[in-house]
Amino acid sequence: CERSEQGLVALGLVQSLDDNSDVEASLIALNSAASALAKSTLWEQALALVDGLGDRRLQPDSYSFNALATALQRAKRWEASLHMLEDMRKGRISPDVTSYSIAIGACGETGRQWQ
Image (cartoon, rainbow, N blue to C red; front, top):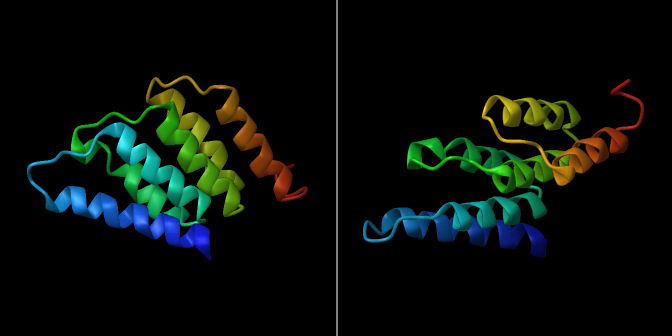
């Protein structure tokens, strides 16, 4: 429950940034929010946040994708986690050890469904 609240607080802070025309959200702030959402298993909100980076004229980086991959792993969405690796490559972002570890973990948590 506490983790879920942290994700909702992060969403509220992002909304506050959006409402304040004098302050523009940085990639670091949005990645932190995506990470908080991942930890609180709010994967759909994390996906929307990372997908919306382009609308903010921000380019997702490996931290963005790894936060989203963590959210997908926790939601047991192993196929989407594997697609993330491909999306990273298409976006010319090299998956790192963390990216692969998260994807492997997502496959491992689902049992033998991925085989």
